[in-house]
Amino acid sequence: MTGSVTRLHPALVHHIVNTLGRRTLRPLQEEAIKPVVDGKDALLLAPTAGGKTEEAFFPVLTAMEEKRWTGLSVLYVCPLKALLNNLLPRLEGYAAWLGRRVALWHGDVTGPARKRILRDPPDVLLTTSESLEAMLVSANVDHAHFLDGVRAIVVDEVHAFAGDDRGWHLLAFLERLSRVTGQPIQRIGLSATVGNPPELLEWLRGSDRGIRPCAVVSPGVEVPVSGPPAGDTELDYVGPVDNAAT
Image 1 (cartoon, rainbow, N blue to C red):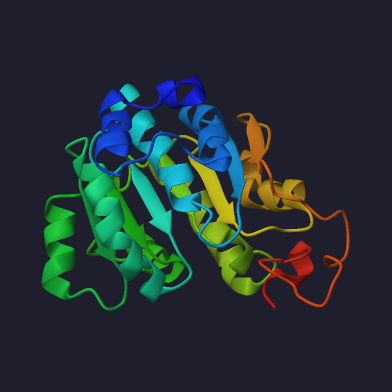
Image 2: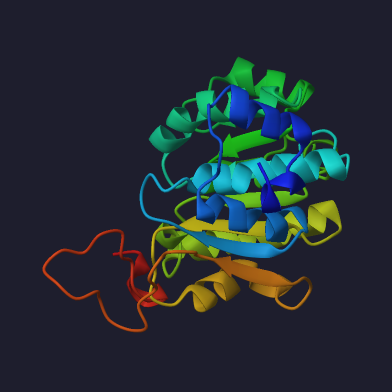
């Protein structure tokens, strides 16, 4: 592999080639490497099954190694528990290539399992926005110990949050989390095609606008200027922020 892929951790490149059998990455995955590893806030756009998860996770794992993040350093937020359940085995495998651990925390996770996570935090925690809120208000969670090492958050299906109350709650929790960590947190959104990606990215950045550079990554994805795409079928089209919830 050549080009931007060389920015990935060598162990990841080894397993992408020898375990996944991939000689190249998709353009979207390759173009996301540099901005994410460099710590930019980013919005990564791709159709369904377009590789958005790997697009974010491989460079985040690389940053974790390069910058020597320890303890719980990455939150991966999804709008649905079922999506988190499906992602868990895949992300566990990727993280294990670097000797890192992934855990799951949502409403169906048992009390004993949560206690184990609090006692021995993973490197990456898959969770929902509601569970994130619960962590931040729970007297059973030592925020200074458990969350102060968070350095990046990946919000999957970010268009499902934007423009409704659930999204504003998520932003509020991120602001509070920044206060817990004492520093801005890199924010990475994953989305299907939307009509106004810069606006969606600025929404996700919240009060962190201007603190760090940002990038919209969408190679090969036609981004509509306004209105739905032509034709009778709409595929992975969200539209402006006001319509995102619908």
